[in-house]
Image (tube, rainbow, N blue to C red; front, side):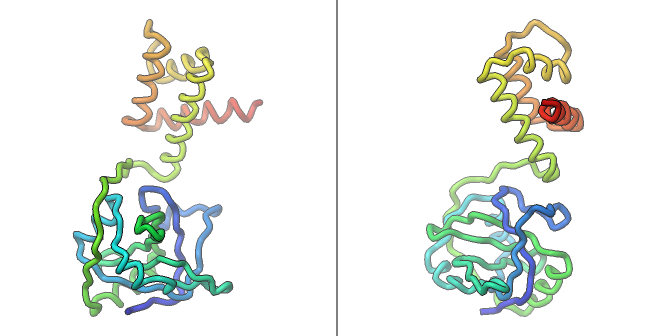
Length: 214
């Protein structure tokens, strides 16, 4: 098995892989002492990134406890780097074979791994595809967080019958009309989900400021 040494990973459970330039200071970056590199086909790498899958136990046994962290020497039970010699991602898997978190790599470290992988033999990972991962790949990490926050806020206002505030937010985007509060709620929620844009960023700031004032 091929290994790489001394890399920084930022495992997150976000369905979209967070590129290194979107990492936050609050993220819990992992300084990895040693981790295996597995070369796969471009098709397999694409499926592992874009689908919910269940990985075969034989592969889990192969990589078990092979990833070691610096300082503590703690082992991550099921973790590895995957590459097709064009792109590199890190994955962490639970004992059931489900990928629970992913990480991109710093640019210079990714380039080093790509060079290392050119002469590495390609392997086949056996897994079952469960479902397609659905996410908005055109939104930044910050916008995805703001989108989720707004959706929760809209749900909260409707559930708690804070209809005046819900109508106010609705009218920040749409013209005043005679729709029922349920119709406004549904239209606003659908718009945030499917058409997120700068106007929704402004809506997020309005909501955020109302809580700061409190």
